[in-house]
Image (cartoon, rainbow, N blue to C red; front, top):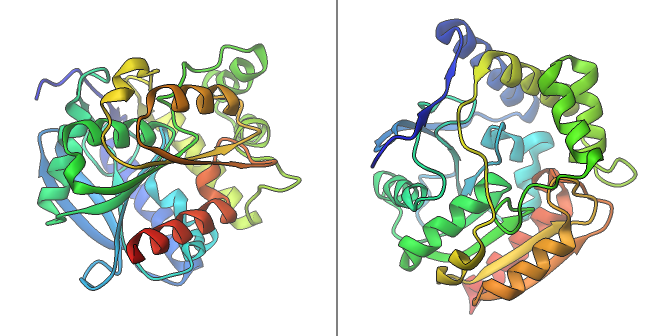
Length: 304
């Protein structure tokens, strides 16, 4: 696998310690300890968090996070409980994002992220599983669905970054660039309020929102991000050979929902269903009813 770029923490020991302390706070608030896996892949060390992973009798779900996030964001306010049934859950820390995995990344337009995802399955000894990806993670799910569809029971895409180009509207550019230009808590909060959440309906507890603000300030200011961003896969999506479920928030500024739906229907041959959640922003992986939906579908598929 050819390495395209490398991202890194500016002060590796200090920044890793900060992140570890952040994880400890999350674990304490959620009342659980995440299992840890450190595996070697073509992108170097890949870190994976787990819940219930030793219970082989359960269905398995593998999660790939969005850009500039950690997979643990899925469990803010014990969000993984919203699947409403017990599963083996692996939360993969994608290489090249601000987390405990190494920063090497392949060319985003190659299929290498799909091959990397297959390596993760092999190293974790997962024969076949459900997968879910938010934003950037949705692109990884689709790459994986091209190169190794036989290992995927179904894929769940949450406001994915592969069904259209990044929105160039002035409001989206403003709120996305604001914290990058000046990574203060106030600017990050503005971005979260306008792009990630829709607080009349979609929000976090005060503790979790503070944790997310702290993480984003840390990630923007302490991580040298050279990772390529998601892109519209266009006709390449027609090569995906797995059953796919699309979950969209109608307040997503980054990738407006209707355009993603239209392109999914155009290109995804195995698109099984589309679910739109009203008054939900880009961070749909933190929305309880979206995870309820995924849990219900997994139970339904497992019984069929």
